[in-house]
Structure formats: C-alpha cells, structure tokens
Image (cartoon, protein in one colour):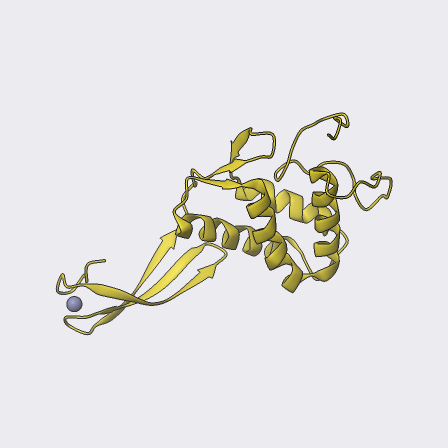
Amino acid sequence: MQCPYCGGDAAVLDSRTTSEGVRRRRNCSNCKRRFTTYEKVAAPAVKVVKRSGRSETFSAEKLIKILQRVSRDRQEFGEEEATRLARSVEAQLLDAGAKSVPSSKLATMVLDLLRDMDRLSYDRLAANYMNEAGILRTTPSSSTTEGQLGLFVGEPKGGGKLK
Ligand SMILES: [Zn+2]
C-alpha cells in the first residue's frame, strides 16, 4: 500500500480483527512514518459450497444467528462474542482471497474459534454439525440438537437418506 505522506511503499506491521473490521498498522519503508488503516469488511462474495454441491453466499449474520442458537443460555457467549467470532471468520475468508470455501472447511474454522471461547457451545455446534453431515449415525433425539442449522451442510430436508 502507498504511504499517504510520501507515496512510498508501506508494509503491514500487524493486523488485528475487531468486531467491525480489520485494523492494520503500517510502516513506510521510505519516510519511516507509521499510520493505521481501518478496513471495514464489506459484504463478502465468498461462496460456501455444501456437500450436496449447492452453494450459497457466506453470511456473517446467518452465522451469528446459528451461534446464538447454540449458545442461547450461555452467559459466557452472548451476542458480542458471536459477532466477534463471525467477523473473525469473515476476515479470514477475505484474507485468504478465495472465491469459495467448502462447508466442511468453514465449519472447522468456526469450531476452532468457538472451542477457545465457549466449550459447551462448541460441543453443541460440533454435535449438530456432525449430525447434519451424517458423520454421527445416531438419531438426533436429544433436545440440544434442534434440527439442522443449515449454513454448513443444509439439505437434505426431511431426513434424506444417507448412502
Ligand atoms: Zn512515507
């Protein structure tokens, strides 16, 4: 990126993901001035490709809703935490520069972050995801897994047959 003072090359010193976007500190290699840029995360055009082959545009809002559902009785993990996690995932997707991401990869990213933030919500989401993906062959009779969350796998509705 160009230095706003002298037009020289400015390198990134560090970047930090906040709930509202990515903040980067930069250092100009020419005039040595330091400055900060703040990147608001725009609506990303990253496609989530599901196992069925269908895809949908990644939505941080949808992810936040899913997170709030699995953590609805958790004081440790409220709206603020859900938003932070979703924005962080969004920033990772944008940083990677990929046009699409497999739903399994997205689920791994979300679960990795959630595990460190709230273990119980992590367990619930992991169980739900594995049910959806057919990794667990158990019948989802437990009340902690309330049907399909949709973002990661989606379909088959109405208990489609597993091969
Ligand atoms: Zn400069």
